[in-house]
Length: 243
Image (tube, rainbow, N blue to C red; front, side, top):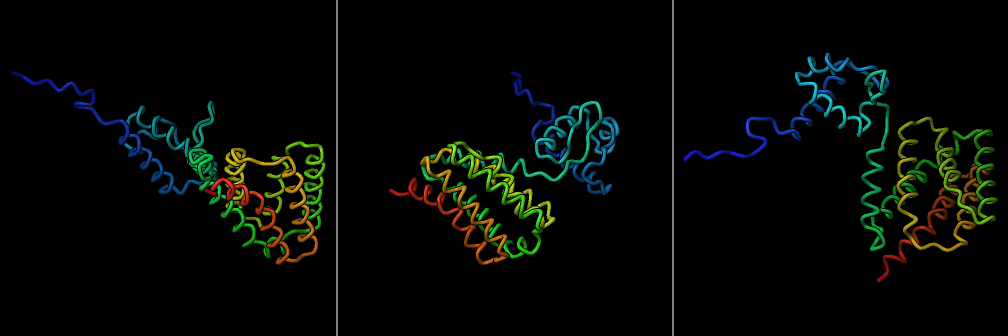
């Protein structure tokens, strides 16, 4: 009696591992040819020949790399080497943060740790790099937050702009990417915390204190102001974690 293997993968390549293998070959191609962010990759046919894979495998591999921002597909123009991005990190941390939810907010606490450590650790460098224009812009953003808070309105985008502006003069793209990435995770996960109406006003005031320290040129005061800024959300997380 003949036994028939009904597996749909009999005599074929397993699609998952194959896609990953081709994705690795494309990354190796980028490195080997010293391509830079924004550089155009070869056409699909040329890429197939370069990495030794079929069109379908290359297309699937490009989807994987696109999701990781390693490549960027511009329809009608081609596929390019992606620019620096931490979108994959944001997606992963956000999911983990929402998954922990109201039970403990463990991931959110870690995100706050990273944000505070980054800003406090760079306080002296930020003080030295900020010029009059940046200080004026930070002050204007703090004014806007205070005005919105007084009206009972949210100011998420202003808050984002403030923290990026604080780090911007350092001229380090990775620091800006990290600042924005962890800000995004906190902004998405933090609303699951229970907050009070006056928290907006307190948060706005804490940003004003940061500006005062920046204007005074005092790195120690800036570090203290940053710690005070993150104290309310730490207290909210502690309340959730308390048995």
